[in-house]
Structure formats: structure tokens, C-alpha cells
Image (cartoon, rainbow, N blue to C red; front, side, top):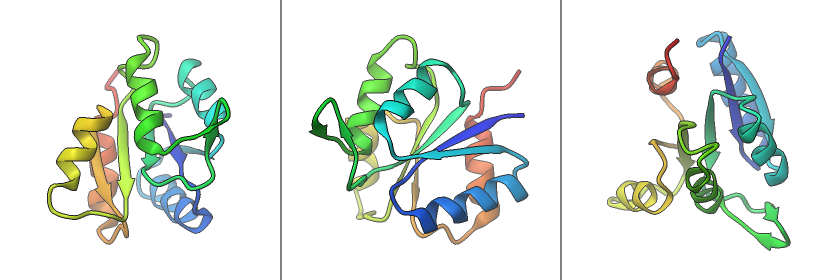
Length: 132
């Protein structure tokens, strides 16, 4: 069973995503906004894909505030976690943002909130999951 790590500071969003992914996608879900935990899970390969909220408002790493872009950059820069698929999730989707966020962060894909089309959301995640 594949595991999705949801990095999201809004518990309601995290719950909605979890429900969609477990019910529709048959996926395992973990949730945290603790950056140390994210790094641990990623390094240990305890998740197959990460859904990364861009605007993590409470997240701190090594004493500095970080957002989803920064965490994604750190994961993509580390050879141990560079190939782990990361999908950015953001509510601030203006024209051109998508390209900027992807370029800046090195993420693999991008989903805008709110998620309206649940099936498409699941398919987008499934398409990036490593196939055995």
C-alpha cells in the first residue's frame, strides 16, 4: 500500500485530503506539519509521495520559519530524498504562480485549493506514485 504524506497546517484541509485519498485512492495517509518529522519520514522513505502545502504558517526548521517551497527545496537538494515526488498544494493560484512555484521549489506537480474534482485529485497523485 502506498503512503501519502500530507504536510498541511490546516487540519480541515488535511482531513478532507485524507478522506479522499483513503476512500477513493485506497492509499495510506500520514499528516504532519512538523518539519523535522517531514524530513525524518522522507529520509526513511516512510512515504511514497508528499502533498506539500505552500503556505505553512507555523512551520519552523532549525529555528527559522519555512514554507512548503523551502521544505521542497531542501528535500529536492538531498540525494537521499531528491527523487521523492512532491506535489505543491496552494490556495494562491494566480496566472504564472504555478510555473514560479514549480521552478522555485523543484516540485513535481501542483494542485490548487480548494480541491473540487476529487477524482482528478486522486488521479494526479496516482500518476506520480512510483510504479513497482
